[in-house]
Image (cartoon, rainbow, N blue to C red):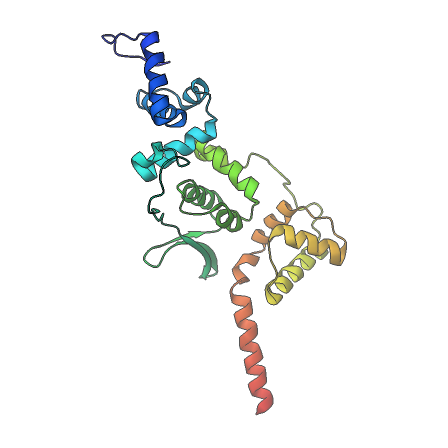
Length: 258
């Protein structure tokens, strides 16, 4: 599995005794982490290391990420070590913004903000999932920003770890024409979207699908709804529409008083 230095002799019986002694002193999990990291430094494949040490592959990847964030603390057994002052990990907030009719996802804190246009779907997924894997965003935050379930978000994070950005590319060709989305359905979709924005309801594709089912008895797939919402440019009015309505109400009130 690894090309060890040729001038070092390994003796199995010594290894067994030394590992047993280390496990009795440090704990099995700590010793396994030390062995895993040593094999990783020697250049072994991550999948082979996890298999050799009977460690779930996802657990091993999380361990490597913790080393990047916490250093030596990643080797300790959290269940056995005495309570210590908690190291506060930096987290970020997510918000949306509309600039020049272009909706953006904003990630950051009071000092730094990163803005990503939502039309750049692959870029949004890559950046958000990278922040998630680094512990800077929660699964809930990431899922809401990507309009996905928590399970779908976790699956995409694993795909990014295994296959790089190629794992995030949607390989389904899907519907190439607007079959089933007649002008009448599109008008109802626009109407429902605007209604949900005005009354403050969720405008996620799954919620719109449920609302259109109840109101119009339409059976529309959330993925297709999401596609047509973006085509119609509806996300651009999400922030501006309530403000315009408030302005119109104020103008109407002032006019009636005069």
